[in-house]
Image (tube, rainbow, N blue to C red; front, side):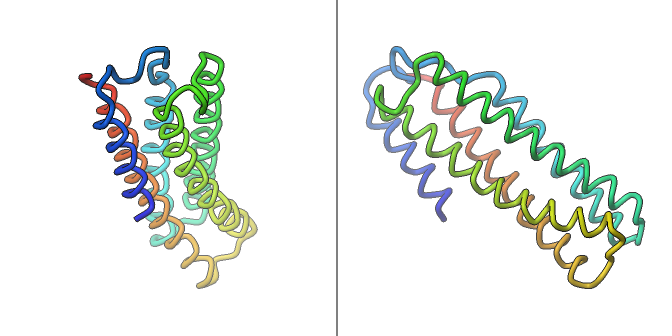
Length: 169
């Protein structure tokens, strides 16, 4: 619900603005956002492979794919951080326009949720690497995967909203 509300807020700001969008003086969305999107999609694929390894009792596969998911998740966060620095360096700060505020709020909200997913992902990956295949770890992998796929879907909607919001004007 919070993502839906945030997207609605962005759309209201976008539709209420009678000028060009993004507003004059605001930089275009960085291409690194597309790269981070592709990394997040790849992380969902690797998580699917990890859960397949879990169901098949393929310990090495489970470890490999959970580890790959963790690396991709951290790469996503790093690239998102780089995108923010890039935009701030090009003059897109909170004080310039509501567009900047809504962009940082949407992407920051998602990044906080990704970080909230990285923590249990790291925990289950660590436990699996140590040989723990208990029922609680198995549930942890499954629940974290569900959350991760939700984050992926939410990001796709957010990203497409941001991109579509820059069209027209």
